Image (spheres, rainbow, N blue to C red):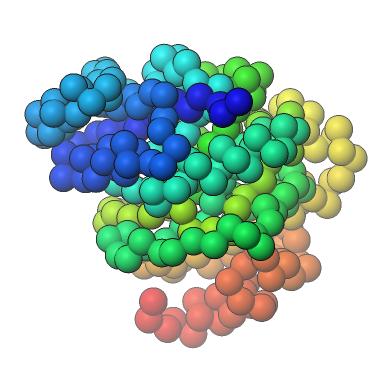
Length: 304
């Protein structure tokens, strides 16, 4: 028997994009049983843009501006499906996304969450071939170093969201609230990724400096929460803890470098190397010896 799926779309001042997201949710070859758009206090034309979709069964929920975590939590509290899919208002889906994901989870009842690869949007929606494509497990030891899931790609069992607790999204986190949830779900059971481009991801311009500070504080809090709930000690791996903190500082250094704040970037990078001098795996960084190369760039004062 096919599972029921609830789709949750948080939206804040996304009137120029949200219709595209809703259209791709409605156009799925495996129809969702519920599509919920949570308007997080938009001051643009979001409500008017969504009005034509109410007759098509889309649920519209308005809340005072409280952040994307609260918006997603509001959607989760209204979800009735066995599975819950998240779709950001500026992203889109391949028409077969839910079909392929639902079949994958149906065949793997032990798996709690499934993500997909992405494609650039706006752009060409790629053709997909699932015949010889196997899902890739994302173990907790890997996920605690780096987030391997794109929010708009995730399909998760609603029972896992309930078991993960905390809302399920932590409203105190602004930026990496999704990563925090994926870690808590992965502590409960297997999570996997499909290396198939089923999610269209849109890069939206913003303040890189502000993003760097928000993400640095957020991931720092996530690592602290892992310590508070005994996640490191339960696995008896102090070096993994050091590596996770070092990767966090490296990624912060990269973001600060991109925003032009070289001094902060250099400090974070030196802290990263001091905490964990071993090289990161190739699955974790974009190039071999990534930190050494970033250090050379910062020391030589090359343009970003």
